[in-house]
Amino acid sequence: SIAKATVFLSHSLQQETLGPYPVAIAAYALSLASDNQSAIDTADAHLRKLATRDGEDTVLYWEVGGQHRLRGEARPGHVPSASAITVEATSYGLLHLLLRNNITAAKKVAKWLTEQRNYGGG
Image 1 (cartoon, rainbow, N blue to C red):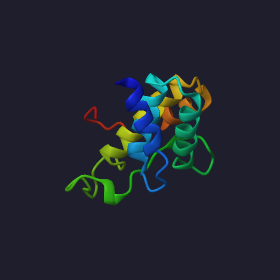
Image 2 (image 1 turned 90 degrees about the horizontal axis):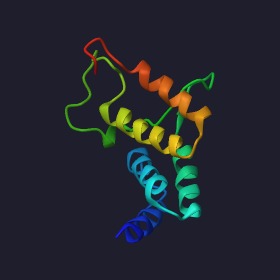
Image 3 (image 1 turned 90 degrees about the vertical axis):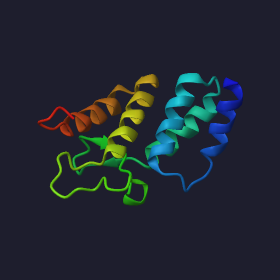
């Protein structure tokens, strides 16, 4: 079952239209469960292509556009400014990077995630 699932995920990642959320989950799942290094490398490259960085290259995250957000999620003045799905996609990206031992990039992702915390603990 795991072999079939990893084959499915690696084939799914060939769709260039996939957004950051499914790519982040697939990259993490492949890093966790697959022995196919080529598929993991392809997922990693696809995920990196979708990443957003700040001007100083100190943070890294995966922004999920408005078309992928849940209805009613966008609330003006709500803290944090990132959508919940962006935080979740970025978290999966972080897990993928940690499994790949990419500590340099993982630090940038962790920095961005900690900046998304709000006074209520969310």
